[in-house]
Image 1 (cartoon, rainbow, N blue to C red):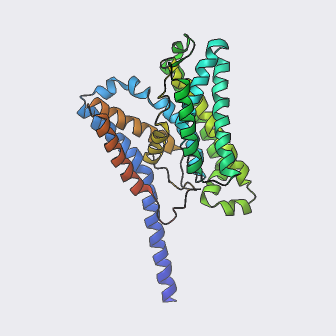
Image 2 (tube, helix red, strand yellow; image 1 turned 30 degrees about the vertical axis):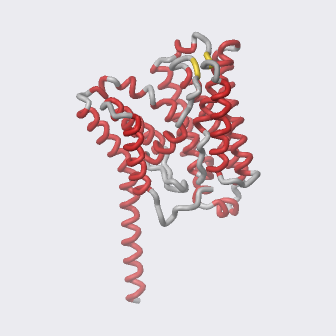
Length: 323
């Protein structure tokens, strides 16, 4: 009897400890965002606050595209092809805008992103190749296509594209995407299925979830979302160069992890990871740039911060092999 009581007390202590760590992991990104924002404002003499429009202008594409990768990571996968998807979709948006108008151009970008996502999903689901291998392959493949299409000159869009480069439009588009994603993820079976697959795919199958179909559709959805982000990307300058979308996949991964996203997905993912992480990454990057930090040093600091957050948020007891 005494042994059973001791075991019960021990389990209760472990649960309390786990609960405290979970709360700390949820709060740390928010605290970090506030602390870094205050720190860089002090170090730059308030320049960050006075240039908030410039700072925020860099977050819209990252935040929108991060939502698709968030869905992928929730089910335990990875996606390194988002930068190349953004580049290809941006080229399509620019090309179509010259002859068919903006609505058709935006639709073309979404369809292009979805098509590349379908390629990722096909090899991942049907050929049973690990997600990070498939998406790295498509990343290099379509990065080569982007460089080929922009060899002679940047691909220019309609001259009217830059007229849409307003804070109101970009903020409205971002909020609409986030609100729809939040409602679907939080209040429908979609989010439950994603978490279930991330927590354990075999158990999800036994529960009646069509996991293969779900995984394929998630990659298509992630590509389509980034295809829409291509519209926000091109209206800044009205054209696409060979560097279009370059390193976006790295930025998204860092942003989500900074926001507290568990690497293995599952039940502990929170939709807030997208917003907090994207803001934290952009504030960190913008603050370091305003301080005159070189590109090499910037990447070094970002790498150190990323490593620290991975060490904090990686749950070594439940960490799974990436699917």
